[in-house]
Image (cartoon, rainbow, N blue to C red; front, side, top):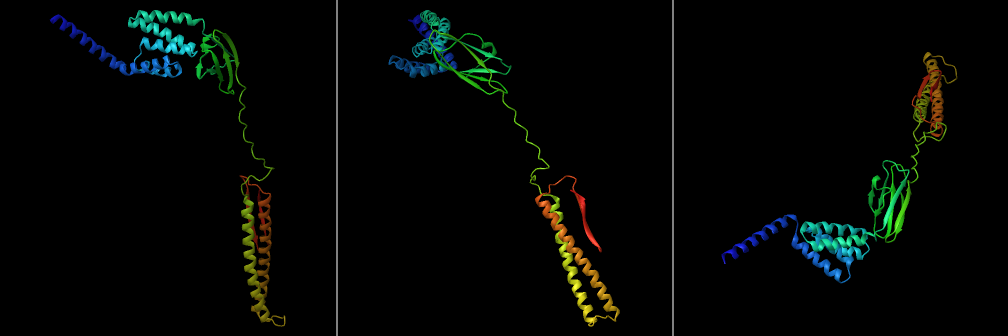
Length: 313
């Protein structure tokens, strides 16, 4: 009895060691449950629904038995290229596990399937270093161009992308066991964005206000103010002179001074109104036709004998 107990203890220890090792690798219990669900669906003829369960089981704990179930379902749904890859993987996994039955089955299935796999050759004419062909969402490098690659039967989308070119796309359908060659080209070159034209000095106003507007209307306001103030003063002096010289003949020096002062003030008032009118005209010109320049210079001058506006616009 003692040898049997020792043997049983060794088996239990080995089982515990295996379970511990497997636990680090994934979740074997959950993987087995996924295989059972997938197998039941496959038996009911629902391979499309079974495939996700087999894929999930492989993520949790990769086993040869799971791989052959997945490959069988993929073959039934005409995912032949995928099935071939999993038959070959199952053969290698079975050899590692020491399962000769699965290894032989996978070898036989892989050989039988190879003749049914379609081959699609993609060629890109005028390819640039950054050009790529995306087949069914997978980017193919330069090494894949001109090489017959296994694909699943059915329709496939091909997109050509290259910097400075428009994307081009093409759809190709290939049958089981067929070999097909597709020649693709780069899309048309993209047009560079045109630079915004510089504003034309002779065209419409640029939207900025000309300094002539500010100077002109400012001068107009000042001129009218000066003309009005000095006009009022002129009227006052004229009234004083009229009172001192009722007959038009002035005998006192004060009356004579008032009359001369009134004339001077009247002249200044007139000049103020003239300058105001010129300023208003300049302001209107700047508002309608004037355009600002970086070197514009404006100066206003007012003197006892007249006023003026000078500068470069």
